[in-house]
Image 1 (cartoon, one colour):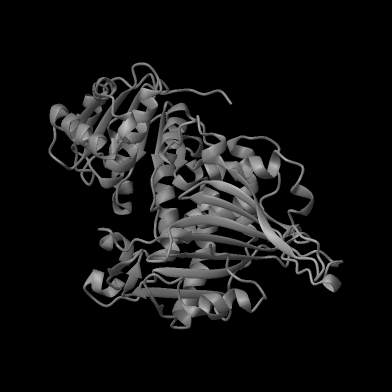
Image 2 (cartoon, rainbow, N blue to C red; image 1 turned 60 degrees about the horizontal axis):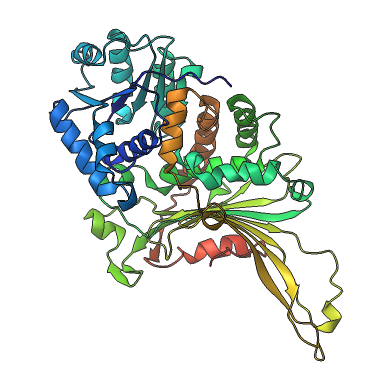
Length: 487
């Protein structure tokens, strides 16, 4: 594709936690590596009462706090800060947008907007941008989640955006798609002939996707209690990972081809009916316990009130198409689990006959583990013979074949996911962003499950902080003769 960099970037929510931890460090990283267009200006906006100088000081403090020590070059930071300006704005009213437009100035060279605001402000913000002339063919907009809390509210947000920006101008952000290891799923699957012949229901017994967090609310109580693990993690990150694992080979590496194949998978997810929801899903909420040797409080204690919000979800999903019929996809995510890890474990089917059985050799099915965080690797677990004379039988052991991305690409700097996504927004590459039909297919499936919870009065089961969730999550896989892949 032809990249078309813009000349200006506008950041909504420029004083928020996301801006401090991710956006400003990511933009600095691009600037330091000479990847931002020459002359690109960055305008931050939020309700906070800053001028240019005070916001530049704010940004410098954020960089000092969150940049790695080896990236803190004062001269480079100073040159980056020169790109930045600020205009205070109350996005709920239209009056301030004219001043914002005046601050940004001429946008004939193109404008990219990163919109990180409360969903309730989306329509007002879009209308304000339009009224101030901050829309049009040379403007593109990036939308940070949450994009609604169900299908209806997501459609409402998408409709509001579509009144001003067409789909080609709209970049919906799922930061997991900016992770290097997630993109390596595509390279692993479609850059090698080894896996494709068995990447189907005939070769794969089950697929497990786990996103485990050790943290609790961490200052996000207001958002998280209204969202829960299903909306916060499953609806976006986990279903995107499932789609990448399950999709058919795209014809080309471009936004249209890849997203066409992903949405086919999402539309092929078997709906979980009201009757099946209690058997195919597990919800939990953590109580007090110990994580990494530290005593932590339960969710309700952190929240300081009772709640029925789930902090853990496990789901058995099925993809009803030719490739995957009969292969379960197990999804699991939760807070206050024993380890911080995000991974995909693909368990292949066992060999049809073991010639080692009569000699005492026990085989385990091969497993491919794609670890996304905290360390990044691809590991294939295979069977090997232990050294020895085998007088008392053949001894076999599972051993790993490792591709550590940290080791193999040690000379390459590991980038924050937002670096790639912000650069792609600035340059206009939609490949790693989520299309409207994907988002709505995800919400439709999630809404069906939540309707089943309501109809069956499903309440989260308790699990101790530091455990792998309710015992019912173990039963979810063991009923099928499978087990969760836990290191």
